[in-house]
Length: 345
Image 1 (cartoon, rainbow, N blue to C red):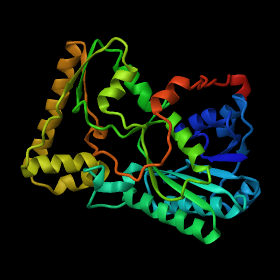
Image 2: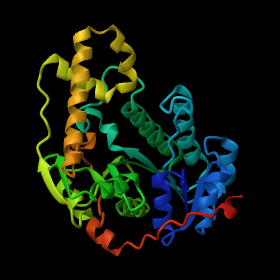
Image 3: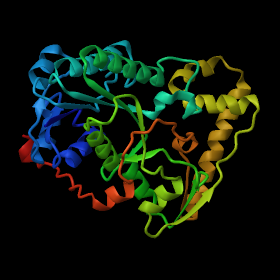
Image 4: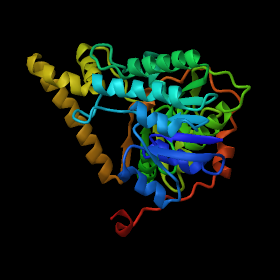
């Protein structure tokens, strides 16, 4: 069985390649030679292709039994969504379905952000581009194309991805190097975290013929609390959990919350707001900076994250997943080898 990872040089795609290499005939697909260097240095046989182009997709997917789409295009100039990037993402999905093996299975890595306000209360209601709306649209495109071509399609709404080579885990390990940290979250709150070993397990489950194709939610099994997440990585740091600072219901606090979730869209509008809003925003920033400086003097760090404010992800959940702790215990993810300058040149 040949399994291709489209977007294999992305952070999640790369780690999945390392995890899946012993279970399948794995073929990482990248768009350029630079992305190929690192993977080939680690023993992978890559294909260079832009799957948004029909010719590339036809040449590189015709013999593929399972396509895992981890790629997500953004506008190169703004670093965000645009009409061009949306068209590219749609073509990647359609071409993956159209040009892969006749009986192929397509797995699209979507996100829990597609649940919009059900999960993320700060989801923008006011300005496009709407990331949640685009993901919902791409999921619909995928399911529609799979029905049309009679192929198995699985849009997976994945949680906050943690793994040995993910930025989230590197950050949490850095945080836990302090003598004490204060985490502003209710410790028993569901985290929506999904480790890459569970993503691998989800991919292998989707290949099984008895699993019905549809949109599924994927988080750790069973779902971890934030306390479990921090304690899993902690060896010596003193952790104190503190309730998140409540937002009062006056209009200024509402505006501040809105600005934090829509920074790049709201900043130009600030010029037209009354001066009292400007002063209130500056005051909040100053208080946050002061609290950070006090915590540094105490050799402690106050941790707050937008992820902490998410609601528990609703189902349906992908059935039959192995317990995440068991997968982590048995995981033998090798350390990524960085190529030398000689191998790059």
